[in-house]
Every structure is written in C-alpha cells, then in structure tokens.
Image 1 (cartoon, protein in one colour):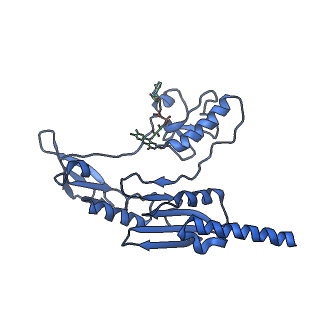
Image 2 (cartoon, helix red, strand yellow):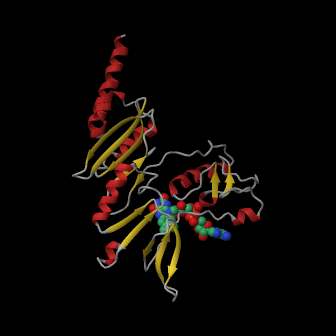
Image 3 (cartoon, helix red, strand yellow):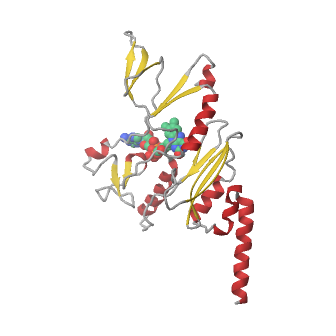
Length: 261
Ligand SMILES: Cc1cc2nc3c(=O)[nH]c(=O)nc-3n(C[C@H](O)[C@H](O)[C@H](O)COP(=O)(O)OP(=O)(O)OC[C@H]3O[C@@H](n4cnc5c(N)ncnc54)[C@H](O)[C@@H]3O)c2cc1C
C-alpha cells in the first residue's frame, strides 16, 4: 500500500503483541524490521487492540478505536485476522471438534471412516495455515488410504523466510533464549545485520537472521539433523564454509584416532 499509494497514502500497522512478528523474531530483530519499515514511511502501533470502527454517518469509516480508548483517524481499514477453520460440516456430521475437526496421527476423525486434513483439521493443539505441514499430512493420509501403516503425522519445526521486498529475514525455533540455552549473537546496526543462534548441548535449536540470511538454510539443516556443532562453535556465526571445514577435519581426526587405537 505504501509503495503503490505514494507519500499521500499514510499507512499505519496495528499489532496486538509488543513487537512485530512476535512468533518468529526476538526483540532485536523485530526492532530492526520496524526501523526498516519506518524508513519506508510506515507507522507502527504495537501492544494495541482494535475494539471498534467509527463511521462518518454516511457509511464510510473515519477512525478506529483502541482498547485504551485512543482513536486513530482512518479512511480504509484492512484486517489480517489469520486463518479460522470452518468445521461446520464436521460438526453437522457429528464429528468431534474443538477449534477444528479433531484428527489423530493418521488423520482419522472421531469416525474411523472419515478423514480430514489441512486447514479444517486440528491435530493435538495445532491448526494449520501453511502448505508445508499439510503436504506432510497428505503423505500420511495417502499411505493410510493405500492400506499401509505409515508413521504417525507429527509436528516438525519450520523456518520462516520473510517476503517483504528488500528485507531479508530467516528464523526458526524459539524466539527467546531459555536458561538452558547457550546464546551466540552478532549485531551490526549500521549495516542492518543481525544473527542470533540458540544452542543446547552443542546442538542448534533456533536461529534468527536479519540482513545476511545466506546461511539460514544451512543452520536449519544442522538443527533438523541435530548435528553436534561443539567443534566449530567459535565459527558458527560466520556461516557454513569455515564451520563445515572444522567439522570435517574433526570427524576425520577422530576417525584416525579410532584407527590408531
Ligand atoms: C492468498 C493466499 C496466499 C497464501 N500464501 C501462502 C504461502 O505463501 N505459503 C503457504 O505455505 N501457504 C499460503 N497460503 C495458505 C495455503 O494456501 C493454505 O494453507 C492451503 O492451501 C490449505 O490447504 P487445504 O487443502 O486445507 O485447503 P484448500 O487448499 O483451500 O483446499 C480446499 C478445497 O476444498 C474445496 N471445497 C471446499 N468446500 C467444498 C465442498 N463443500 N465440497 C467439495 N469441495 C469443497 C475447495 O474448493 C478447495 O479446492 C495462502 C493462502 C491464501 C488464501
């Protein structure tokens, strides 16, 4: 909107949480993102809840009201309210539903002859709004319907890549460090570069990269494979190449030690 509307179109973003992308970013990365977007002319209100819309008496919106009573002028309002599963059909059919149609690890509903997957289903406490986990559900259900007994569907970590043009961002795992985490970070605010890695017992559990995100997929692979990165911990912030070289030489030297023994 900001790009297409030119300077005359003032765009404000209201967000309920205290920072942008609170499920993917820590405070530092969220602030970098906010600053970048502010520089592009956007205004942010975080930690606010929208409670009402005012109209000008002729059916045209003229302001929004926040939970703290504050009013902000607006002549267009766009709500990005997320995905809300429609489980009405399942409910009418008498299937067990909570926020969506409940399924087990084989995508079977409370009626063993009826299956559900995708945005209309709920597995444990999870509902869905991205294709990646749904593709994995498809694999499991296809195998079940072919008479096989596949491994149960299970939640798996996913990585986020931000699609805002010119903003490079890659994140996975917990946003905040917990007491058991060994945290490595690098911040260059001048260049808008930030990297924060969360390690536990030599394994990578989470990463947030802002600016230079080239090594994001490599970090994600290491986390999924639970690779022991202790030997290259001091090089991890510099990316894949040096760290991999150290890991390879560490592996070959432990192999030759074993051979010698
Ligand atoms: C604009 C947009 C952009 C998105 N971008 C991304 C993205 O970049 N990355 C990402 O991972 N996800 C994205 N998503 C989300 C992703 O598309 C959905 O999570 C995914 O498609 C859901 O799959 P599904 O099979 O549950 O439902 P759907 O893909 O919606 O399929 C449901 C099908 O059921 C059919 N249907 C509905 N009711 C009936 C009926 N009564 N009888 C017969 N057929 C019926 C529908 O016609 C439809 O074909 C986006 C979604 C939207 C809307």
